[in-house]
Structure formats: structure tokens, C-alpha cells
Image (tube, rainbow, N blue to C red; front, top):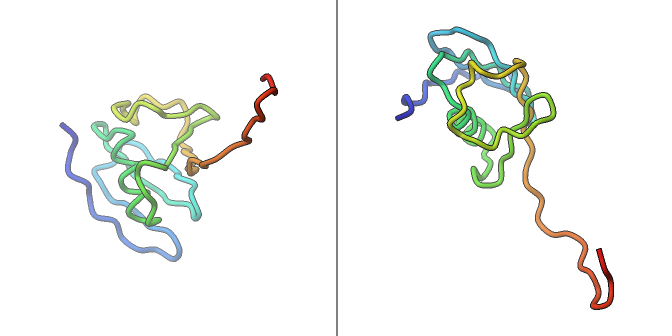
Length: 103
């Protein structure tokens, strides 16, 4: 069971999250956010905070660290190899192939 989400405090165009800190994370979305993450925080907690701060749909937000996707929301933040997390949105659509075209 995840912990309740802590409050965030506005600071300019981004927000500063204050929790009992063990590590500091830099989340790059439309603006950069600084999170002080406790040991028990998971990827799902970061996703929820970013979605609330940036007003984004949670189902379309993708998180990456060091170029690798963070697909498993249960991953503990303390196990990440870097302190930077990049945020992108899933894009819909793609090229439609005609009937005789092979991949």
C-alpha cells in the first residue's frame, strides 16, 4: 500500500515537495520539479504528483530515467540509478499502411 501523497508548495513555475527526505529527484516535464523522496515512495507516487501539478491525464504520462522507461509503478525510487526523471506523453496515431505494403 502506498503512502498518502504529501503536500506540494508553489515555487515559481514549478513546485517543491517536502517529505522526510532521503534523496532528491529532478522531474523534467513542461517545467522542472524538485522532489524530496522518502524511501517508501514509488514511481506511481511521482506519476500522480506530476499529473496533478501539470494537469495531465495519468494514463498518458510516461516516465523515463537514463533513457529507460519506468513501466512498473511499484518500483521504489530509492532503486533508481539517477536522480533525473523525464516526463513525456503518449502520442496517438501513426502511419496507416496501404493494403499491399509490407513492414
